[in-house]
Image (cartoon, rainbow, N blue to C red; front, top):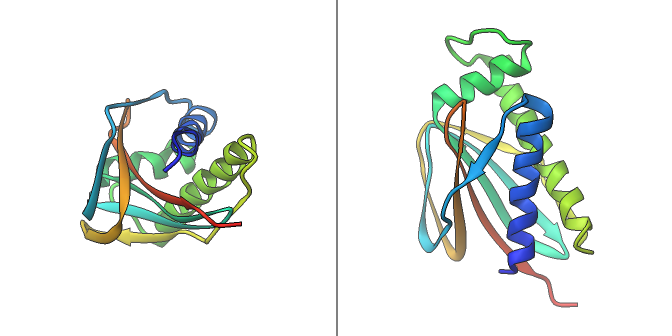
Length: 154
């Protein structure tokens, strides 16, 4: 995996959290692994194709998800995520996807991203591909981004 591609995904996440939520987010030490890709209570799975192929999985705890939904709903306190809330989480994934595509285009890399799939509940994803996992801290909670991107042969 190209470090510029990983950094582009991180810039995208930071940009969305800052511009849409007014929140600073700090990446922590990344790890690399194969096999098990850990998840939290909520996951947003994005497929990537074009000049790169792979997945980006954003995972967060339920309380962080509720705060994201609440902010998207104009500052409401969210007790439980309903259908509108799940739609908001999916839209959050769309924002990450769009921003990632923009950041990668600055690296002369053009991608398309599939519509996000939202997973409700902790899961264990498994992959034979290597994932780079980047935990990020913010004032509303932790977000982890798992990235597995391969350059397509020309």
